Image (cartoon, rainbow, N blue to C red; front, side, top):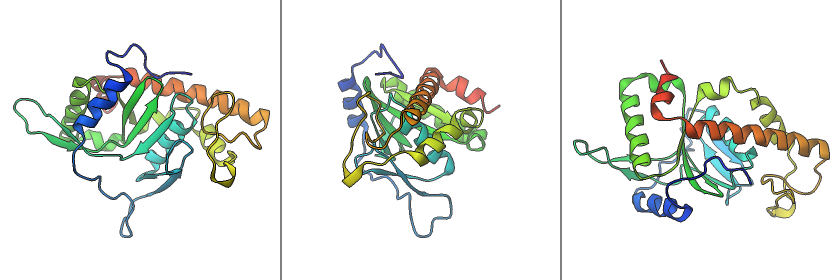
Length: 224
């Protein structure tokens, strides 16, 4: 099975333990409310225990599609918990709610999704650096996906088309292809569709792998 990171300095179990140790008693804020004005909704996912995950922007929905098609991702959760992170010796601890937590064969990964306009302010950049440094200090895998990463990514339209045409498991059962590619029902899946899905999965894996290697300085350089 593909992996978006290898040779991590701590084990899969240690990654989970370190995340658990940082989880606050606070509950994540509600994403979908009656008075909400922004784009919000539920993303149908075979990689979610609840079969659907909340999103609060079109960008988040697009990223969830990439995660869903990626063969390296086994499970996903959006806005799963609130972490208490250290801001350093001269800064108070602060709260942080990840946009997405994914599980891979090598361990969990926290994903932050940001539009470029958000990161243009100095305050937002400072907070982003604090989040990145705190998580990396705990050796917790962390990926930042920017809106610009998706805008110039050629496979995005194909991912959306595949998700719309994807066969959905019957009778509420979760299934997995015998090929080991998660996210599809074994029924009603043509060879042509399967081949398109596999190719898109490879592109999604490659994108996540590349972004996994990108540090905070290189990420913020995209904003300039």
